[in-house]
Image 1 (spheres, rainbow, N blue to C red):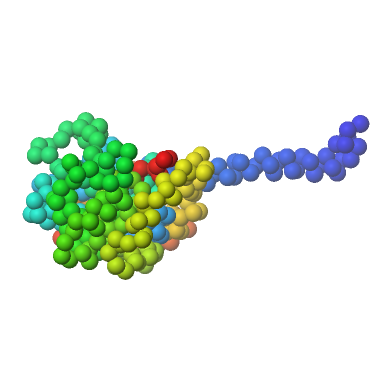
Image 2: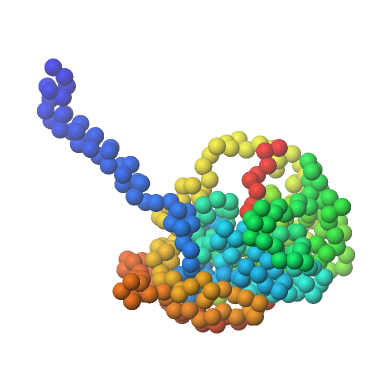
Amino acid sequence: MTMLQKFPRFRTAAFAALAAATLVPAESSAEQLAKNLFGSQTLPAATAARSYGFYSKGCFSGGVAIATDGPTWQAMRLSRNRRWGHPAMIHLIEKLSRDATADGWPGLLLGDISQPRGGPMLTGHASHQIGLDADIWLTPMPSRRLSVSERENMSAISMIRKGGLTVDDRLWTPAHARLLKRAASYPEVERILVHPGIKKKLCDTVQGDRSWLRKVRPFWGHDYHFHVRIGCQKGSTGCKEQAAVPPGDGCDKSLAWWFTEEPWRPNKNPDAPKARDLMTMASLPKECRAVLAAPEPVSEAAVTVGGSGTTIAAAPAPTADGAARGIDPSAPAISANAYAATPDIGTPLPRPRPSN
């Protein structure tokens, strides 16, 4: 006679425990990964422009897209649908493209900004989640318009010597330094991430005013593009500020550390899952549920910023019954403004940490 036959109460408890155990995976699987939910969005939340959470754990509403082509820029990797950002970020990119061209740069090639509603991405970035980061290639824009195929397959050029940590002087020019200086000149820009070798090149060569170097911070990758990050914008009370950059120009021991062995040691746990592969909606600010459920604009064109620096006002897209898609009543409310015209105000697919 088995234990289950001999002790009916034990049998009942065992079956109850088994039933509970079988329910756990189902209950856990019900909470979908946030990257899948946000990665499937094709249009932004047609509500007021707001950032929620932190750069690496959040979302945003009221996003606009930068046009695929402008007089002084071209967007790359169009299939990713990552041309979206907070209106302040998009207009800053547009302003930088104009100012940089006036400084002698041929025009900007734009990398990733954010997904339509932000949030964790299916691939690539840890940050770029709240519409306040953008990647800009260090490769100058060509004098012709690139084809869709070229934008998908063309490789940006690394500024770093192959197998080394310093800039390749055959590729680096004073125009690159002017571009970074221009980007750092805007008050709303808080950080610009570059490869340590690029930071060192700037430290070694910049003359005169060096105050802007404070914003230029060394980081892994970022050898073929630079990452622009602006601060939390007015009205985004749910946006978490980042720590201020340290005082000084950054050409000190903190930079020297990058040229030791420590930053480049192999990852002790290379197979550990990335944060985006574990992050569920419960991990994000509660407002992000409302962002996902919010109505979308009538079209992408209605919320795309072009060369004129203006945005067409857009109403939420109607559903089959003629009403705008509803918002989850249990989610926090987000005030809507139907995309009033935005003013003309003037940060990549980051590479994994190197294994050697």
